[in-house]
Length: 252
Image (cartoon, rainbow, N blue to C red; front, top):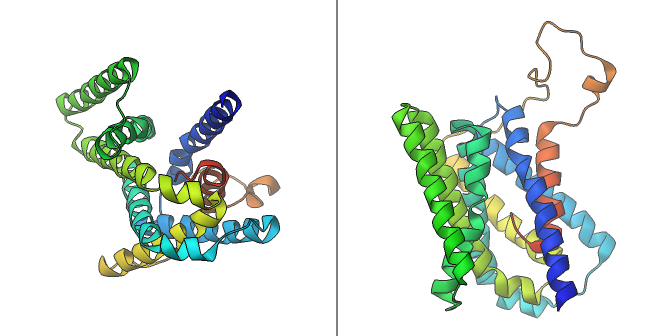
């Protein structure tokens, strides 16, 4: 039991570190539409997960997967909404604000677990929730007093994204306990992809990804070979935060 808890904590910590860099890669894609970023990261991550499944060949009960198909669809909607909100938040506020607020997900996950599963949080956890909410309030009040309306919008989007992810984690608990994580995540990502494609079409956004990005070096500077051969930020964004952490714990 102790070793399992330690392993879970280490996986969660490593996933947190990887998630923390997501906002940086999103900012590297400053000229790309939010819908396109989300769609791209879902498609690339889905292909990567499919490759992992081909290599690992985990035992998956298709009957269980069919029984859980309604939950998979719900989780796909939630994770797609979370991605859209988070990417939009990074574009509307600072990287620091978006990263701090998105990492309040455990707070909302704890609240949902108390409401849905009647799990009473400890006194320490309750105190931590209170301190975290005070920090969120202080952050919001500071930006309001400075007249940073755009930042405030991004902060709200990041907070809603955390709420959605907290709900996603609680609803997905039953799925992750019955199906291996990579096998569970692939259909969830495919469901999220369908949602994002529909939202992109409904909002009238076009799908186009610039193959070159001039933000790492000024436009008038020569490009060294290492710069020209660098991976596209969208590829790094999709593989790093989606496949690696989700392969362990099934978190977006």
